[in-house]
Length: 387
Image (cartoon, rainbow, N blue to C red):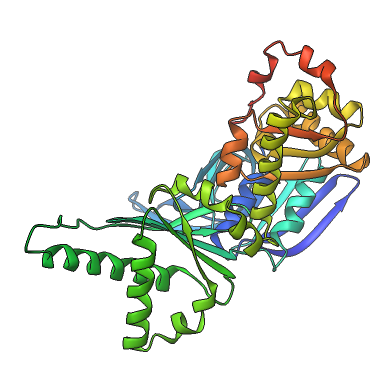
């Protein structure tokens, strides 16, 4: 994301941003809330009447400012669609008329909020940091099925799903099986070459049950030598073989928790989130009076300045209730003021999906608070007030 200008003082003001890659649309989705105003160029269909009474329609590009009423984010196409009423004079669109703005890559938009809070300003800093990009790639596979994924600081993106029907081994004739396997491995290799940017990616995880991953790696590097694919040969050290239970995307969860993987990608945000969640689960088993989830218990722990690490889903900052959002922002700020660590999980990440199952908010405490355990009355299951 490119920051063109930022004019925010005492929580009031505007920022002008240019989304440069698909992940920037995810950041924009997290930044824009109902009630904000967004100014951007758009295409509008205009009817013109001629002197003879016949009418012609043409499409014109115009700049509109709308107050956002609905926000629609297409995760597959990474398209952000905003609908709302026009609030500035325009020759083609009446004041108060509804219009939909599609935010597009490499086209700037201006965002004005009634109030900029610390979470929104932090999101801009994170989005505009050029060092934040997809530095981990993963291929989870089983015989005949593979997913090529990019693991960015905010999202796990499935870039390619490969399905190839592999004939079963038959006695005395395994040629068809071998042919099918080669076709499958070739497709996966092409998927890696097409979707993995080795200039940015530090590590490519290749995961599967059994020996599928080993056979694939052998095939890929035999082909790389045979066809002189320098891109693969030069980056051989970045590939890492890991066990997974299947070739489906959800297997990434166990892959990311492998100690060897954790140490390899230890400096990425994704690894930090996975580690924090691991610690939380471990604490929940060993010392349950130092691990709590749900808004009620975590808020009580924060008031006692007991929170060492706060785990919170970005989903909660998109809730439509402004006051509830403010409560979550205040919770984050109070934990930081008391010297605690805050990890904001992306709901588009495997680890974020796990946290959402725990109401989207959890905390590891500095000291035990058994009185909170005694106060468990089932309120924790009503915290996911996200859209």
